[in-house]
Length: 221
Ligand SMILES: Cc1cc2nc3c(=O)[nH]c(=O)nc-3n(C[C@H](O)[C@H](O)[C@H](O)COP(=O)(O)O)c2cc1C
Image (cartoon, rainbow, N blue to C red; front, side, top):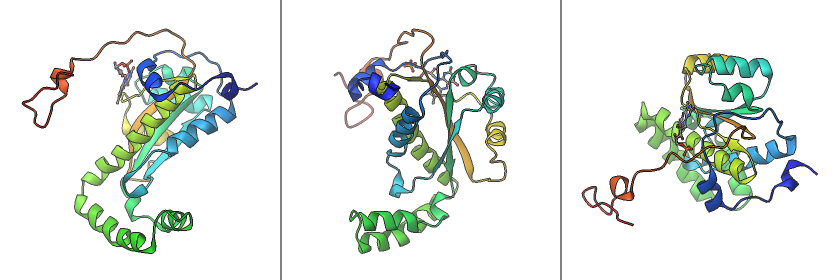
């Protein structure tokens, strides 16, 4: 029996409620089948214009893990967890050949020729106008994919931790991306079996953070 069949997946509300940022992991490996399922659920995330403008690097090799940890202020989750997903965001993804994306949606009957023709004009126009914000837009897509990963992992009995604590150029050197100025690092996510219980640090009241119609009108719940 592999890890997929051992775990009855948690429903989405339960996975969201149960998830915690785990700071230490057991060395237990993740089966290739489970890893593949995580990758499938990660890339099922939506992206603007379905650009899928991310590159996701699965760091598993022990030497690579040590180097990635060193690029991340020596955060030990990366060394302990069997895999760390590095989410790189391609700020120039919109300039690439988008025919594979168009052709797939045409073939499966989801997009029409007129949708594709609209995108052929709209995507370059929209993104050219974004200028420096193209990086930000690619990072949005990568973060949504990372969130899919984290919730999928929780649902399937694994744990995670989003990591912002790293130096971009050092991470790019580890993953072999120093030559690509358009590739930004969005977030790192070690995935593995939790080596600790962890409490919920809590959230502020709705009224501090959620508003109705205008920011002057707190949501009371
Ligand atoms: C974008 C992002 C970056 C984070 N970076 C780090 C990090 O570098 N190291 C770390 O130990 N925790 C990191 N965290 C975890 C947060 O500290 C944690 O999410 C927060 O304290 C709330 O705890 P919870 O995730 O268990 O609800 C990060 C979380 C997010 C969302």
